[in-house]
Structure formats: structure tokens, C-alpha cells
Image 1: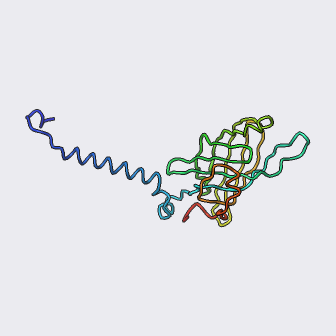
Image 2: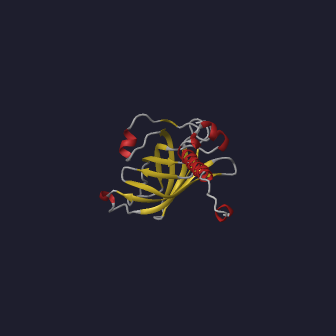
Image 3: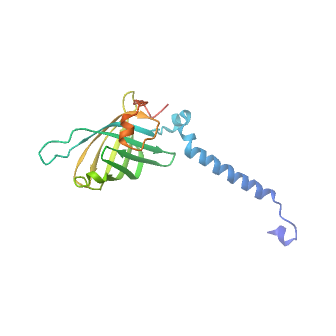
Length: 196
């Protein structure tokens, strides 16, 4: 300001430095958000689990059919998208898709991590006479030992609940239960909290 009052020009160097610094900070943030947080060395120190990819397993429902029998276990696929600050979960069955509206990773006091989400379930048109669109919540604990996958439970606003057991994982993204359940390339669950 004093330079302007004295009739002197303002150097462009500070503006260039600030512009470059802002660009570098934006680039570093973008790289962190998408890639750097996943690096094994980084996650060794942060402890944040990388659970992105498609998980396969089964859903065990408490629902009792009108004839008094329980629904058999349902084969499911769960696609998880994850960045440093955001996680989403999409669960597929042969009859419906559930999209997360809110999802978050939670670090419990005992050291375990869990993924918790609220969802909207949309059945295929052909089954809506017996399965309406509904909302619910789900939560899975993330395994930290070989062979441990994602284990948890869910409940719905239709007053049903059940268990989720996901034991196989693939880095690929699938758009339906049929393609995910028929695909090769899945492997048994491995520890995802540190080192992978």
C-alpha cells in the first residue's frame, strides 16, 4: 500500500510465488486424496484400512416367509469406493441394489476398524410386488488377520435384520451381483488395516 502511495510499482514476484504455492498445495491435496493415502508406508503410520474394491459373500436374513420358513442365505457383492476423506458402499443381490447415502470408517477404542453406512435399497421392477423400496443401515468390522474379511449386520425400516459375511475380495469394480458372483480373480480376504 505504501508503495502505491509513493508512486512505485508492485512487484509481481510475490503474486507468482503465492500462485505457485497454491497450485502445489492443490496438487498435493488431490494426490493425497486419491493415491498417497493408500501407500503401504503411509498406512503403516495412519492405520487407516484400505477396503476399496468388490467383496463377495452372503447375507443371512431374519425374514420369515408367509409359509413360515426362513429365507436361505443370499449371495451378495459389496462394492466399496474409498478416498482419503470419503467412502461409499453399494450392495448388490440378484434382486436389488443398495446405495449408501452416508458412510464412514470408524476407529474403535479397542483398535478395530468398522465401516458403517445408511442406505436406500431399490429392488428390480419384477420383484416389487413382494419387495418394496426401503431404507436401512449396515455395519461391518474389518478383519485384521489372514482369512478375516468383513463381518457385521444390517437392519431395515421394514423391521427385518440380518448378518453380512464377506470373505472374498477383488480390486475390480462390478455393476451387478450376477457379474461379480460369476467372476474369477477374487481372493480370500487378507488383513487390510496395515501393510496391504
